[in-house]
Length: 244
Ligand code: NAD
Image (cartoon, rainbow, N blue to C red):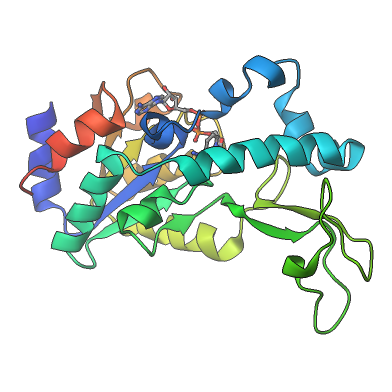
């Protein structure tokens, strides 16, 4: 199956890669399910990753993100991130990386123009849009759990997309364009349970692209795939892209 996928890759003028939490698992960043173990296992994801959850207990949610941010800062791109970045460098303009991940490992591996559907965990922003002109600078917030604005009392929150929130429209548009314009979509390390990202594989397939999934386990979108490569991102991607 991998040889067929390599042939499709060789032929494809445009390749779109959609990545999820499994892409970064071998860099030591837990997937969402794994991240809710240990100390955090008694909390429901909606409590930790929603505006209502944050408003109900800002300190708890801020601390949970602080722990995840530490993990992201310590992590390094794995062989899968590096293989994608090397392919992008060998073929300028041919590869578009779309990620659901809130870490910066694709960027640190060398894909600076990665499309980020779910935001950036290392960024801070105001919980309520700042009404002042110019807006108060999140960098000036008073330290606290969470930090707050000295002028307005507004709280800082992480720059990620929470449950129930809209995706950044520009990123979503760019991802949809990449999906319908590619000739091969590679879907790596996503359960396919989170929408609208999960719909991109079907959109690519309907527009005529081959869809190849890389995941050690079944996903909800395996039915959209022309080929499923059962293995991990850091082992399959270097093999799939070697020499191409
Ligand atoms: P998910 O947690 O729902 O699913 C992870 C998928 O990765 C599973 O299908 C699993 O089988 C697969 N997987 C596990 N290890 C793998 C490996 N080594 N190689 C390849 N695949 C592997 O993740 P999701 O589909 O991305 O959706 C969850 C949401 O959680 C996303 O919206 C994302 O923003 C967020 N999230 C992001 C990060 C991150 O930024 N690294 C981490 C956790 C959660």
